[in-house]
Image (cartoon, rainbow, N blue to C red; front, side, top):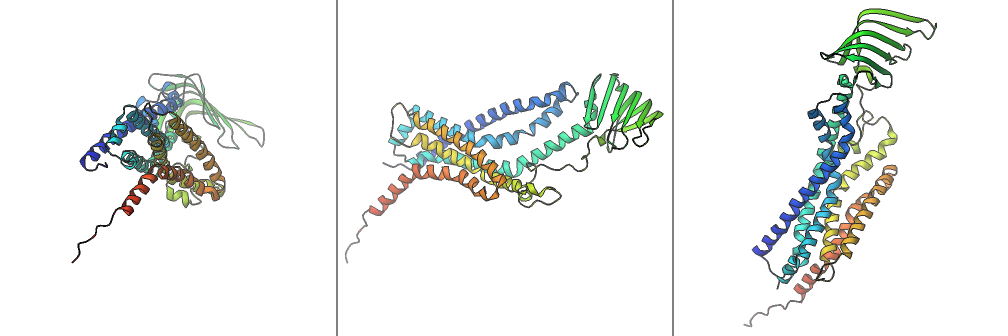
Length: 386
C-alpha cells in the first residue's frame, strides 16, 4: 500500500538531514586537505621572507572557494552513494519499501541534495570564485611588489624581477640594511650597478623604496664603452618599478565575470586568439554545476535500481564509481577541445546533463509509467440513473 502524508515527510527529513550534514563534513574535510597541500608553496613567504602568519592565512584562504567548486559535484556523488548504501545495509530501505514508499519517494532526499549542490555550485562559479581569485591575485601582486621588503634577505642575491637584483650583507634589528649591492637593468640603455654602505626601506604612495647612503653608481655607456661612476651621499631606489607591468596587470580569465568572458573587450583581452578559451570558460561555469545533479542521480540509480539483495550489492556501486571517473576524464577532454574549437561547446552541456537524464529515466521512469497506467486503467464511476 502506498503511504503518504506526515510519515513520508518525516522520512524525507530523516534522510535529507543525513545527506546534508555528511555533504558539509566531507566537502569541508576534503577542501581543507587540498588547501593544506596547495598552501605549502606559500610557506616560504612566512619562513624566509618574514610574512606574518595572519597574512598567509588570508592569502591562502582565498583559494578555498575554487577548491569547493571543483569537488562539490564529486562529494555529492560520494555522500548520496554512501548514505543510501548504509541505509540499504541497515535494512532501512527494506522497511521503507515494505511501508509502501516508491522509488520516487525514496529518491526525493537525494534529488533535493542535488538541487542544493547545483545551486551552491552556481553561486560559486558565477560570483564567489571569480571574486576570491581576483582578490587572491591582487593580494599576491601587492605582496610581490608593495611588500618587497619581505623579500630582501641577508647574504642572498634576491631577484625582485628579471632585471633587478639586490644583495644585502647584513640587516640590523632596527631595519637598517648594511652592505648593499644592486644590479639594475630596468633601463635597456643604462645597465647600472649600485653599491652603498647602508640603506633603509621606506614606504611611499607608489610603493616601497630603499634610501641608500654613502655609495656609488657605476654605469657602462654602451655607445662609447666608457664606465661612468657617480658617488652619492644619499640616493633613492624605487622597488615598485621592479615589474614592467605593475600598472597594467592583465586579469586572468578565472577572475572575470561570465558576462566579460562572453563579451571581452580589447583592454581585457589584448590577444584575440584567446577569445575561444574565454567563451569555453563561460560555458564551463554555466554547465559544470549541473554535473552535481547528474552525479546524485547516478548514485541513486546505483543503490536503488535493480533487484533486492539481502546482503546488498557491490557491483552497481563499483560501476557507478567507474562511471564518475570516466565522466570526469571525459569532461577534462571536452573542456580542452571546446577551448580550441567553440563548435564543440554543446558537448559540455551534453556531458553535464545527459548522464542525469538517462539515470532519471531508468530509475524513476518505471514508477511514473506504472502510476500513469494505474490512473488510466482505473474504473470510471457510473452515475445513478434518473
